[in-house]
Length: 140
Image: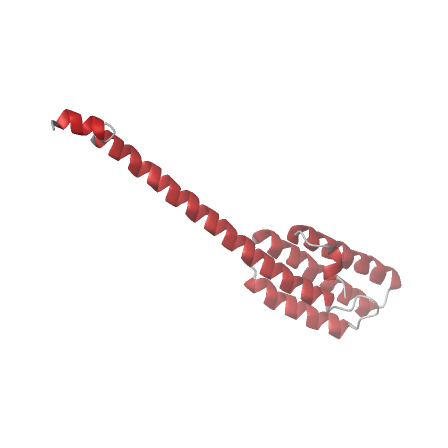
């Protein structure tokens, strides 16, 4: 066989081989990206489940400032382990709203307590949205 007949038999020689390498690299990149996305989704799901458990354990109706401070510390610990930026931001909003409620409970102003309680519930709804899970999972 001549080199021309070998080239045509195997897809135009080295040019076909060179085209096959980028195609193979593209497949590897696409698979790796898909695996990375799946891994991120799995982490976000685990982060959301833990965040929902912590939020559901919080007493929002007639809590003491000490109970709320404990919950804020637990959320601070949880937030440090959350990798997903949207879930972390949602958890920070929940934590910050709980801080506001603790401050309102300390002052004893009923209007501030009601407003802060509404803020906590709104933050829980936002966290549920960020996690794409029912808000009921965030309520105790």
